[in-house]
View 1 (cartoon, rainbow, N blue to C red):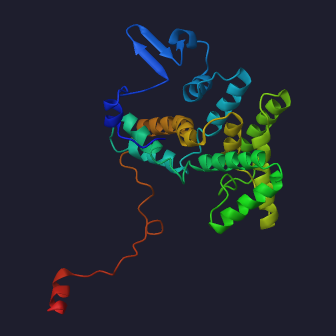
View 2: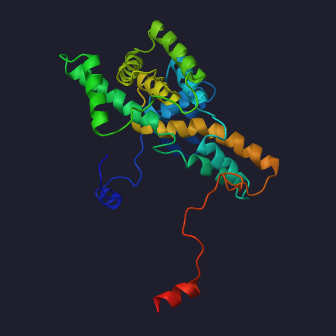
View 3: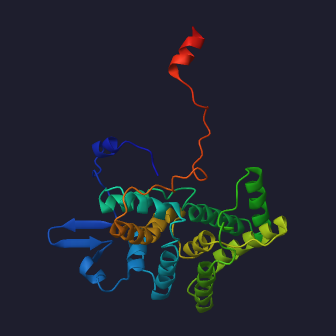
Length: 285
């Protein structure tokens, strides 16, 4: 991405907005060269998302796999901060779309960002393997893990605070393997993800499980989705759950629900003991 002034670009003869995605004119909507009426009824939601983002129409099999990623990440209950925030916002009297936006706005590097980090790591690993034929995948993965340890960073996409056998992960692996066998996807990024999980397990000397972010990252790499788009894709996925939960809370009629009940065990004050302005003034004088 070039860092340049929009005004300078405009002054140099460029349009104020340049887009290769859509052309909108009176009674005409063109999306990446196709009339919208040819896309409506022919493309699924996942195909349209990929088409807008990447400019290509996924095969039905790949589109179904991509859609499975979107479905898998849709909801994880009020334990998830984004879901809880959407529900809390719905009890505060703001507009419904604002309640949904509140939940989505909690998706970031920590909550919802592991897939992007995983994709960057997997893409980088694959690039190194292809550029340097002398290095095996195992060696490159070892080097990457060493680098993560030096930086004191965690391997993204591994482990979960609740699940040690996530049903979403098992299903996505199964669907992905079917497409590998059919030749629809290469399977190289799934192998890379498994190589990282396996080597980390050896280092830790304990069972390490892939989580939904890890397998989703591998699948999206298989489909060629840019890593930088991963949080946006996840926002569309988790957005479905946020809509449903915020709507449910709205209909419950509960008002001003906080993050937890107001009990001493859950909310503890850790500041100074009680003090008074007058007495502090007397001590200072």
